[in-house]
Image: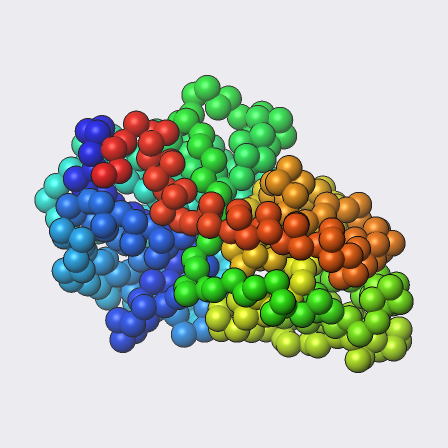
Amino acid sequence: MSKRLESAFIATISDILDEDGERIRHNCPAWPLIEYFSARCDRLTVLELSVPRKGMVFRPQVLRYEGGRFVEMKKCRRLGAWPFSIPEADPQTYFRLKFRDILALFWAAGLYKEKYDLFIGVESLLAMGGGMLKKMGRVRESVYYISDWSPWKFHNKALNAVYLKMDWLACKWSDFIWNFTYTIGQARREILHFDMDRAGRELWVPFGFIPDGVTIPEDGKIDRRKLVFCGGLCRENGVELIIEALPRIIEAAPGVVVEILGDGPDAAALKARAEALELSDSIVWRGYVTDREDILRSYLTASASLAPYMPFKENVKRYGDVIKIRESIGCGLPVVTTDVPPSHEEVLEKGLGEVIPYEAGALAEACARILTDDAYYFPMRGRVIASSRENLWENIYGRTLAAMGVDEA
């Protein structure tokens, strides 16, 4: 690859623009990738493949940037029609969309007659396609970009075997592998026994924070009796532990309130348990919150973010760079977590919160200390604020390209 990127091709299964061409904001890497590479490449081509969801854009779309400016959007309506159309649904696996995705990739690659310096395929199928494009001479070097990954991704064993086979081929056919966490590489070697000497070079590319105008408040403007949880109300996220620990937290810090943003399959049972423990005045159930600014406001005014993941083997959080931990740190908010997410090591090493065993007593003790001991809490908050801007997307991608031997200027 040349030392400077003149052209790049990004293929991602993510919502980028809606039916009216308006930008869709979310936490995934799609827009940070576009913003970073469009500003640094003479030519950037982006293939958008929508995630199955209510209100989804069915057709594949290509965005083209030249000289740092958006030039045009091209749509492939044929690949959004039968047999590739699906009912609007929650995200799930549709095999017909896999065929759509690979066909769309080659359609997009043929729109502009050039050889790309760098191809980035987000998820395994698109990365495999990038390997094919390299063999065809359309790409110089290719990247397999991992976000949501686990050796136990699917309960169906046959489906999981296909998923892992695709992961291996994507690794083998790519020059570089961008893992969200270091534990992904460890699992490939120690659990799956992949021969990674035959694969591309693995790099740690953690989740970045999008500030969106966030201003971290001064110490005196945060609520010293507020804790916040944001995430799905399900077994893996440990909300049950918060409920069980809360009576002891209240005893140590009267007036404490836990703001819970999220919904999920365990919502009814958790609310019933909270009512049985007479915690109605100490929990604010916000439900599923889609407005990211609203979520960030909750982080900015709280004293700590709770992320007590349950430690069972199949918990996918062992292999993901947990968004709410990154968002919390980005807002200057200390974190209380378990040793399940890989980012717990960063929390521990940099003193950005507390890492506890999965026990109600341990969670209660940590929260009580955070809420009542100012001499302990505020220096910790200072360390979080100092770390809050280290993981901006532009810094992460800059470090990554430097490791690949690319001049990002």
